[in-house]
Length: 445
Image 1: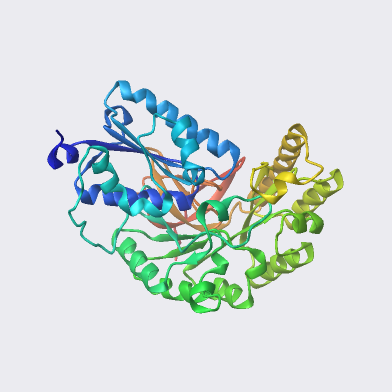
Image 2: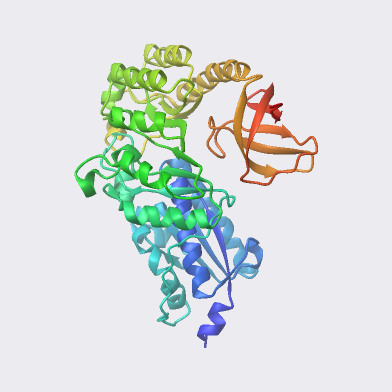
């Protein structure tokens, strides 16, 4: 029979899939696991328990999640005893999941993550009754120690016609400002310099709690935290970007001059069919307001191509928009037809080969824009945060780039010694296709 000590001696491994919001969930889980006394390992082959945090936003994400589960099941011939599945895949019918994936020992719903330790003990026939000590820092970071994602809300109320998020994550709920300030303060004490604010719609932050949009108020509070030097905004829906937020981005020195606007399309009719709460004219108005107020602001966005009813003319309108606005970074995705969404039953579904062709053409267009934008950066001096130290060079990011998805800067060392998290002035010297090369700028003053 298993004892508490026997169970706590087991090693726990983790697999993280999906978005940055999912990453934060797993960091919370790892904290609970380590606080309970379990040992963790990065080597899955020596793990007794493997926790897989899944994504199911679109079909390809579900396939990746299921493949990860099946691949992990092969480890049961080694050290693995239990497989636990958390995350978005679990919004599916439990009976279907349990019957189709018997390899999984336990499915944990997103709102049950706090019970993860007790669920592990129950798998071994015991109850875990010890109280895990409360701590302001309730995450074990999976990012480098100098940046972290701060999830400011959960769920979504927008119900875009193509999207499953409201059905997976539920309705929009903001985290109170005082909790976020407490968490961010703890992160700063751990060495975090860059906070990256995430939520399904960060511009909507606070509406449910305070009766008004409170993202500007949150930015002001976070900016007062010692040690936090950069605050970056992801997933700002354009229809909720107001003059107060634009002014805060412009005037607050800690708010990075970068904003992620998930546009999804530019044709007004397609936007209406998507149930987006904006149109082409309003999008252009916001982009031009941002550019006028904050010269050289970095704007990132994403587009869904091949949405039902999208014509060649609609697609060309996207290309024209790209060439006109010359945004800093743009991602393109083929429309994924998801059961349970309104768009699943829309007429005039676009053939997958056409969708993929449009994605390729859009990327080709954007690559030329990025190359031109990058050429304009040569000889400019940008503050760069160092993400990685190698033998002969550093890898970092300027304000223009979020981690893992945008341009990086390769910086020659030239005998200068810096550490990850240091923010240094870099003169851009060369364009390396999508990325940049530069050298530390030493003022002659």
